[in-house]
Image 1 (cartoon, helix red, strand yellow):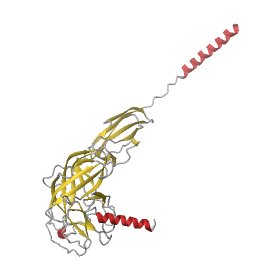
Image 2 (cartoon, helix red, strand yellow):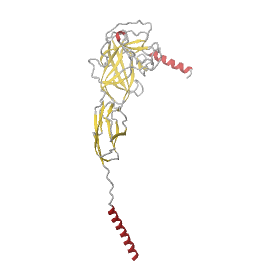
Image 3 (tube, one colour):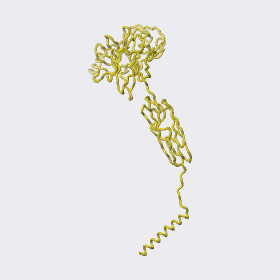
Image 4 (cartoon, rainbow, N blue to C red):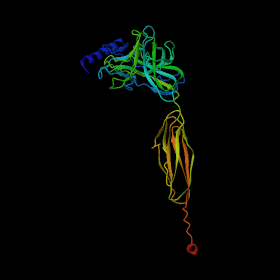
Amino acid sequence: MNRIALSSIALLLANVASAQVAEVFNPSEPVVSVVAPLNPSSGVSPAGAPACGGQLFNNGAFVTSTGNGAGGANLSTLQTTSLGMGTLGFGHQAGTANNRVTDDFVVPAGGWTLNCAVFYAYQTGSTTTSTITAVNVRIWNGPPGAMGSSIVFGDTTTNRMSTTAWTNVYRVTEETATDTTRPIMAQTINLGGLNLAAGTYWIDWQTTGSLASGPWAPPISIIGQAVTGNGQQFTGNTSAWAPAVDGGTGTPAQGLPFLLLGPVGTPTLSLSGTSVNFGNVVSGQTGTSTVTLSNTGTASLSITALTAPTAPFALTGGTCGATPITLAPAASCTLIYRFAPSSAGNFSQTFALTSNGGNASFTLQGSGAVPQPAVVPASGAISQFLLALLTLGIAGWAFSRRR
């Protein structure tokens, strides 16, 4: 790539960064360290929140250090020294500023029911009592504002925030690890049981707070990594969406942390049958049969234990493989068993399966049969039989001669 092309890219990134609304690191900012009691709630589902269910999706972490902040709090550290990063948080203020942020997520086959989302924001200078007052949200079936994309849920005016609480995390820099001026709050958003089919979606949101600063959305933070996603920001001063660029590195690939919550589903173990009868198998010969294991539930099934067979039964193949056996919803696999009796008698073995979708068992049974000896005529009977054939032959020859 030539110098002109490199200069053009650098200029483009600089223009994008300058158009953004973000809180950037200021080395001369004084460090404030007020120790606050830790909040036992993570903010994900505090008291009063709707019945959110379990975690369906986590777009990325923002905690970089556990227990090393003021008062034993956790830290979300902007890597100003080691990576030269500069953006503490992206503006997504409502009102006259009209800034928003967005990031994407993928719904797998089978779809999701979304009860809640959890977003994160801080206002510089707040205490650990949240100052966030409202959040509005939209979900798109493509990048917001792009040709062909449309809104499938939400609007820019409805406050969908049900609760807000401190996450026990401070947003800091590598130079200001004890600073307490940026406590990150988690906002639980009521999505009301929204059903989404499989596909790629973008969720965008906007936050209101009671202080003058922000609210600011902290980006995904991973130690040693400047590129953390593909988030975007809409700024009211440009009325356009653009990549979320770090102001220090110019990296146009900052992700934004959020959670999606809903019914996580239940795995269910099902068998093709609870009994397999090989019938009568002659000693020294082999009979085979197949048992099918299926996941008829709505979450991933893990079969962690399966009783091993002993002679005269043996597991000889199939598609399941060794334990642990993992089956997605609606998936199945097979076990092929062999019955090879070496003696007469009735044989039976029961095989137990242990899984997160319930336990089950099935029984293999069969009878060993004694080989039947071949029927051989007695020696006297053989002689008489051969004599009769010889007599018939001589008589036939004599008759043909008389003619």
